[in-house]
Length: 247
Length: 247
DNA sequence: GGCTTCGCTTGATCTGGGTCAAGGTCAAGC
DNA sequence: GCTTGACCTTGACCCAGATCAAGCGAAGCC
Image 1 (cartoon, chains in turn orange, blue, brown, purple):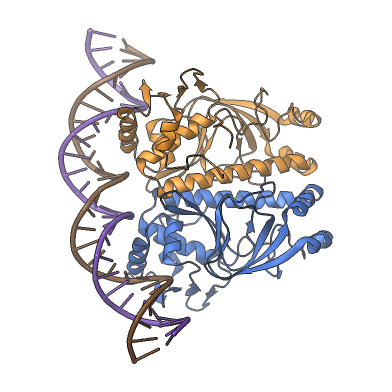
Image 2: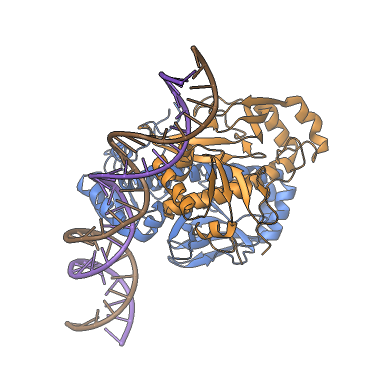
């Protein structure tokens, strides 16, 4: 097993200004023209809703920077986040006209959008893009399944620790102090959004954050800036296997 | 909105003896020879383990009949089911050598297997199969996200009702009495497996089943045979939107 | 027949996290 | 400087579901 990988494990094209793994223009030069013709950018600010479940959605998109969340809401208002999209993640489903989930920007956000119909045409003509999309979807399914273990079986404290480790692993803006091994990053979610992610209430999220802070597992600078003195100590709180993978 | 669809909504090829949507030999006559050459059948009995997480897995497969479960286990024994495979569902991931989850047969089970390497070759040469696999994976992702809402936000009673309605919808062996509207089927899972599916204990599953029975929402004939006098009454217990979809 | 095992049910009790309520902190706007 | 509102923290209390424990019924086996 290699040492813990913290930086951007899923992105094929971290150096690409448009970080869409599925359709990175730099990596697929032959598709550049197609893509350039149908792509455009959209910006949202933190808290804005991008689409509501059931809305027509005439585009698919790739997150350039910022964070977006997919959430489901029950009639009585109970909410569960079911997807968290970080830079390079893909939003939308080809062949589906309407959104299935509410999509909101949890931070300021830039999307690189593609009109859905021509994107779909491109899928049909350039097979390896749909293969790449398949790979990404399978990755997302694995993430969803890890998330299900978290929702179904972990304690509140384990949920918080797991969430922090997931963000730490995936956040490209993280910076790790090479000497001390300390890591630091900003939470891209409010306490309420964290609660929706984790299947908790915001009060429980707050209490458990305080608990981890009291026990020295994390430091809190302001409400949103997290410092992790020792990542292994955090990992011990997640309930996950120590080596984070299959032997 | 069409009337409630109960029979086999996901299978493209319900009439095909091999019900694999991804690679149905009947529907894709041109691939018949490829597939015939690399396919073989395996049978398992209820309770048998097919692979353990971390094992080498040199095949992918399609469920012909019976039910298989994917589960994750934590070090201290807490278990969460993360996938339930019914006839026509696909098992395994091309490009992945080792299993990520424990796979067990929860009923007697027949798989139609394809050796992984030649299957992967076929994916590369016949693009529409990978497109079909993408569609199926996206469906599974949607199912996982509905499951996440269940795990994160539903009460025990709602979880049980949701589970029963999911099985009722998908089980091909269900038979609905056209006059009375009654539906009946056998549970493909033990109480313990249901608990692992729902993020509950088996005691709570048992109690809630008794509760639904007491309230006339279901009838129990033996331990495993379920009769649903009125599907709409069951749906009212799930916490889901009445019309089961987007307006 | 008697014994064991497996799957399930039911009861009594406990507890983690939900609920309700109050108050703190900080930035923006007047 | 004061007010407002968004976001967060903390305390007191409660309850749904977990835990612990006993027992049932049917199938399989000696």
